[in-house]
Length: 172
Image (cartoon, one colour):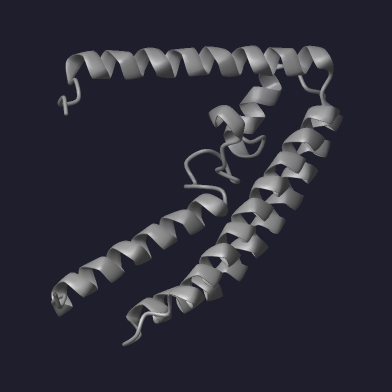
């Protein structure tokens, strides 16, 4: 069965959108959560931007701690930006491979693996930044942040349950 050119264009557009979304996620997500915009494990916010400043104020971080954490954040943001920029070429190659008259699945798999390697590098860099920032804080401050994070997760879970109760998903 031969695919129509309209369905092929729609499939390519969907793939391009998915690739762009993955790239934004790799670079730190959307910019609504501070400058880095990223989320750490369990959805915990990264320590940059306005949200990070509020969290550090809440645990009474000293000016020195804030300065050190800001430096860690800035270095991680720069590293993640470089990774994001490096992945543009891979995405362009993937789109070209998908638009070619003959689909080279071996080439597409190699490109997918390259992109996965970049995602892994970004994840490792974000983890390193979180560990480095955590080392700047005292055990008491880290415990306070963990408690605030748990409260936030509990609140989000409660909101999810409330929304689900108002508009349950259709049964399958």
